[in-house]
Amino acid sequence: MQSAPSVVYPLGRSHFLGRLLLIGWLVAAGVTVWWWRASALADWRPLLGCAALLIVAWVMATGWRRAPVGLLQWDGQRWHWESLVYRSGTSLEPPAVVLDLQFALLLRLDNQAGAGWWLWAERSASPPRWFDLRRAVYAKHRPVTSQDSEAADFAPGELAATVEHTHSAPARHL
Image (cartoon, rainbow, N blue to C red; front, side, top):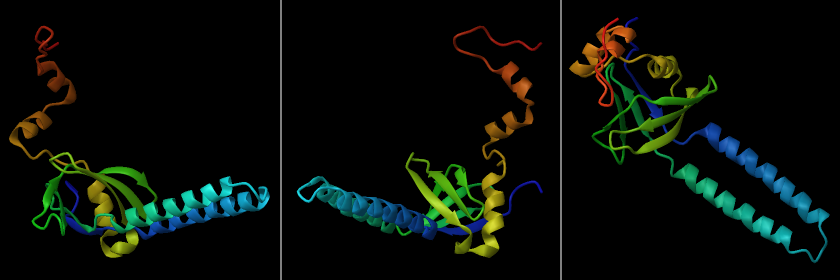
């Protein structure tokens, strides 16, 4: 296969991330309760720990609810993101896979303006398209511009030998 198939995949609030955050918060709550019971009655520090625990719960829930929701699209040449904010879509750099758990991918998406998002793609969001998304994310994408196409035709050594550096003498073919 020359390139990955086109795919449209829904991304948004990750149930995996939600469960992971909840488990982490429950562990922290258990430690805080243990700390409260093990401390002296007049000790105020466990109260501070409880307040911090509540603030962390609010921050985690707010962040999870505000996670971007939309469609990640690969049309065979370019990546696009469509959501309520980007109704007409925005072009993206190829997504970077930060973590691959086989059933979930943590992706770093950067648009042309430099804005970046960290989003989870989960198999459960669209099982029939899961392997198409994985192929598209891991595929080496062909250059789109004519200049990039010309550079791709050179072997790596040939390209390096033809580049002129501003701080040195022009490179020569060996």
